[in-house]
Structure formats: structure tokens, C-alpha cells
Length: 259
Image (tube, rainbow, N blue to C red; front, side, top):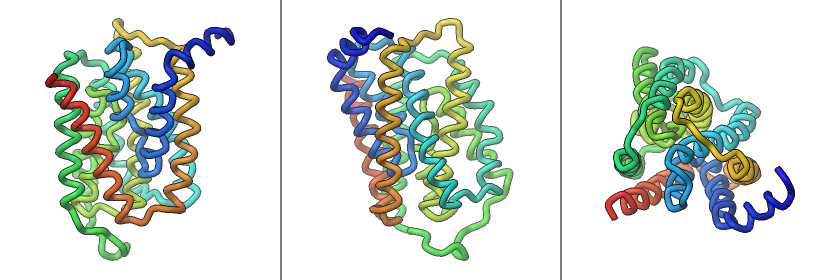
């Protein structure tokens, strides 16, 4: 990549770079990668539909990798509950990523599901504060939850944390911080699986020059966001901020889909 090409890409796509940075900061602060918003922003450009899902997943992987490092440092992972969530989600996300889906159907499915997730999270007022108030979840149920969400996530091209987190809050699965940590790990493994599924599709294509610039942008934004999370957000703020972000993105996607 020559310096001239990099300069031209930055000038021509400066608005994308700024938006991706902001999205990475906001989403990493609540444990997400930002895949749904990357999709929404890219859908407003001339970038081909086949590239949109791949770019979103790659940015997801970069952002949540930083999140996971921070959460591991603070020992936020209940591994005995996390592993069953991802063990079936990984192959199902791969299958979902491989499947072809029409562009209109893709955005309607994404927007509708996200809006439902936002409503569920906002209406659920309970905030778990103590470890001894948590409900135990069977391994089989965790596997079912993770597999179902992983498949849907693979189809639409996101990591799935934005679906998983509201559901885990609703069933009182664990503390908000541990749910955010779990969502980050879930996003990472399913994004990797989903992008591998897309790579396996003979129709796959991606513009690596622009994607590399966006990946660098979200890496910087993600590192800033997860540090803000650990210093500024209380559990209730973490939950409400997540719901607002999900609702905004879903409405924007649906608005564009029906225009």
C-alpha cells in the first residue's frame, strides 16, 4: 500500500474513519465490538454488500480482543458458564456465515432483532449486585442459547454479543460486568467462525486497503472505550447505555430498509 493510496483513502472515506472510531469507543465501553453499527454505517456507502459483513466481523475481532484482555486482567470470566455458550455457537456461526442471504432480508432481520433486544434490556429493571443472588443455568440451556444466537449472528455478520447480552440480563445470568465480559468473548469466537465461513464462500470479496485503515481505527477506539468502561460506568449505566445503543442502531437500519 503506497502512501499516496493511503492518503487518498483517508480523504475519500474520512467520515467512515471518524464514525468507526466513535462506534468502537462506545461499544467497547459496554463490552461489544460494534458490528451492528459498522453494518449500519457501511450500508450507507457504495461498498458492496458482500464486503460489508466481512469488514464488520474483522473490526469486531480487533475491538473485542482488547476488551477480553482487560476483562481477563480483572478476572471477569465465569468459565464454567461461558464455555457451554460458545461450544455450539462456533460451528453454527460458521454455517450462518457461509449461507447466502438477500440484502433486503438481511437488514430487516438485523434491525428487527436488535430492536426487540433493546426493548427487552430496557424493560428489565433488575440489576444483579451480589454473586449469591444469581440463578444457576444448566449446561444444556447455555449450549442452546449460545448455538441459536451464534447461528443468527453468522447470518447477519456480527459477533452476537448484542443479542446475547440483553438475553443474559433478562434471565439474571450473572453480574453486568461478567455479562459484558462474556459478550466480548462470545463476539470474538463467533466473529472468527463467521469470517471463516465467509472466506469459504466462492463469492467472497473484500477490499483490504480500506479495511486495514478501518481495522486500525477501531483498534484505537476500542482501547479507549474499554478503559472508560472500567472507570466511569456503573452496572445500571452499563445496562442502560447498551439498550440505547441497540435501539438507535436498529431503528436506523429499519428506516433505511423500508425507504
